[in-house]
Length: 54
Ligand SMILES: [Zn+2]
Image 1 (cartoon, protein in one colour):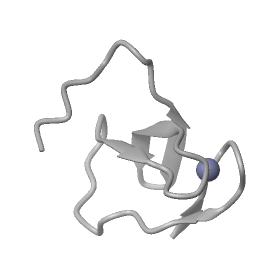
Image 2 (tube, rainbow, N blue to C red):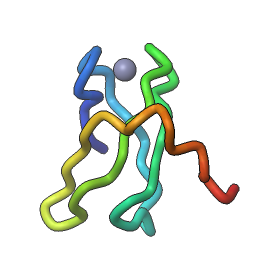
Image 3 (spheres, rainbow, N blue to C red):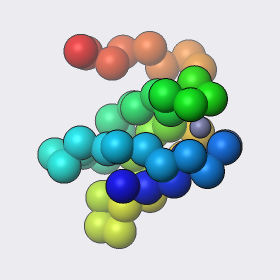
Image 4 (tube, rainbow, N blue to C red):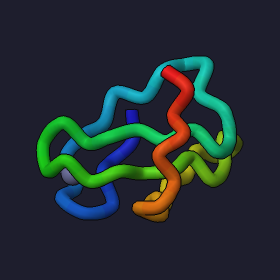
């Protein structure tokens, strides 16, 4: 688990999350990109990147 950078709500990130993966906060809806997995770190995802692939 990691906290949303915007609202500090806890995000349930998949255990197999990889760098570059974009997740949406269920609480505030902001899109966050996984910038590092060790340690886990998130950053605001650029809005132009909609290539989620899922
Ligand atoms: Zn949030």
